[in-house]
Image (cartoon, rainbow, N blue to C red):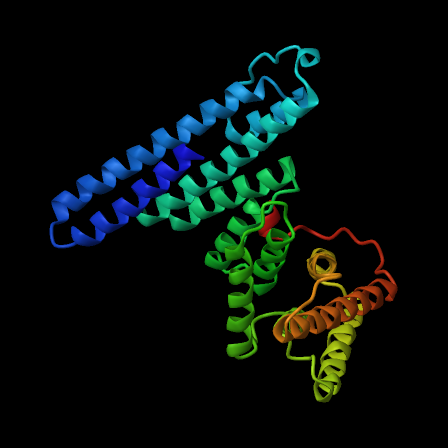
Amino acid sequence: MAVWQAHVFINSTYRKADAASEEWPDQRRQLHTEWLEFLKVSSLYYVNFIKRLGTCIDKEDMEKVAVTLGIEQMQPHDSGTISAETKRVFRNSIYCALVRIGDLTRYRCQVTNSQEKYLLRAYRLYSFANEFDAKPGTAHHQLATVAERLNYGDLDVIYHLYMAVVGQDSTVRTRQNLIAAFKKILCSPVDTSMDTMVAWFIRLHANLYLGNFVPAEASAKYAELENEVLNRVEQAIQRPGPHTLTTLLTMVTTNIAAWDDVDKYLAQQSGKRACKRERERERECVCVCLCVQQLTTKMCQIRHPPAPCFSRPPYCD
């Protein structure tokens, strides 16, 4: 943690120096060269860190890490001499290191024209971190950031932010980013380039989370929007496209994450004496919980599509 805080401080210092050197191109090019070298050395530090710890985890996991990072596999220690708790700590440290390598890869976009190349590389590293350990939410939060920059669509961004919110290491900033994303969606016109089913589904979640369906007079608006989403879902199942199955699974998983989020909140508030605003928030959460539960149930009750071989979207490769 202390090493990464140092890296964050250096990144902040670099950005200030880069902004101040715009009038001196020669010095700025030298600064960019040194910055790229720093990122390379820092990434190598985390790779070596993972190589050392990788000898202490299960062989199958170590092989996956080695393939992802393109490093040679080291001979594992005798697993019988390492306790389960120690292995858990090692796995968590490797997870954090994978996320840091992804962050350092993403930082390269500050000084290179090949932004998409490094964003895709960071996306793969974050995705593997989730595969390596699905419980924390840090990698999901970073995936939301990269997905937005790669224009993967609002559904990907909201899905990853919700998964980050319900992760074990969720932070206040994660929830603030989710709220900001929902407000941005509602303040923007409906994206006509997006699948209509997905567009209305995201707006339904945004209104639910921000409490726009809590008053009684808003119930008709909610019913109308929910019916629109379900009708679009049924049409998509009857006439599936190449990515329909992946999209529907993402939508259902987003529902489950939203349900889990408000369910945990209500459990925390149980038995507490709440002020007026907290009681209003609790009513909002009950509304979200019930609406998401009903929507997920209805989506799952719609007849399943035939079993054609759906291709994976590009961002899943």
